[in-house]
Length: 337
Image (cartoon, rainbow, N blue to C red):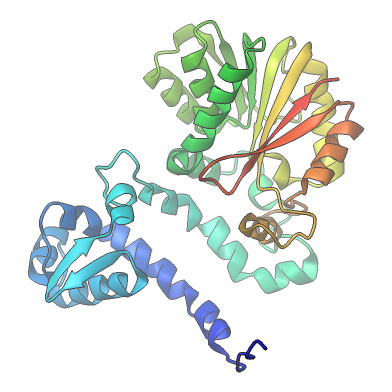
């Protein structure tokens, strides 16, 4: 017989105090403590000098990072864990600290600060549009900050296209943001031309990515709303990465009918999304639905069945879903017909 667990308020208190962990990792990134330790500054005094902070403050911060599991400690000496060395040292090619610029940005933070109102309203309490507002400045922050979180999925998509050996000559990247999805494909297909659609202020970041990859005249931009601009036609691939979740199904279908019209006869749509199971509480990425409640008027995290229905209602054929390794997201590949 399984022994029952005594009731405990521990989960409540851990959740209620979770903001302290978020603030701690933000402070740690701000003072660059992980890089400082990598450089050999391993005591409170040395960290205080390197990070331009008080010795008392660095001791308390470092101790809490040990408690959280980001550091280890022997006597008065601090050490990096393997994960911290790979992902939190600012000189590491796998550094993810910059993602905090968006993860803790005002629209996300304020959206959750007003979550009670959003629950009562059924959509973001910030204003009528939330993060779907035209030329929202935070999408520039997103474009510059979130590459470390997205690059793995970009690699996967590009390698998938290489492995399937289909026609890939002309790509439309909708809500291109940082541009890494289209750029990674273009780096592997030397004849590919990419057209990126996004707000003009965001496209400056995508162009920086394209220029860094020396794509030159193979990279084109269309500034404006994805719902309003003329895409052109004859695309082999349309990329819809982290976009559909901002809108309700009828709005998604409206966009997808337009996407359907711009594809070549054998074209495909590649969608990247947080896809919950049918129970909507698993896997862990199912929590993304609440982010959409807090920050958008009608956005949601859609199940694969829901996404398949949305695509079929817009005139598309078969969809298939793929898990992306080391990611909370899935890729959906949809045939035009």
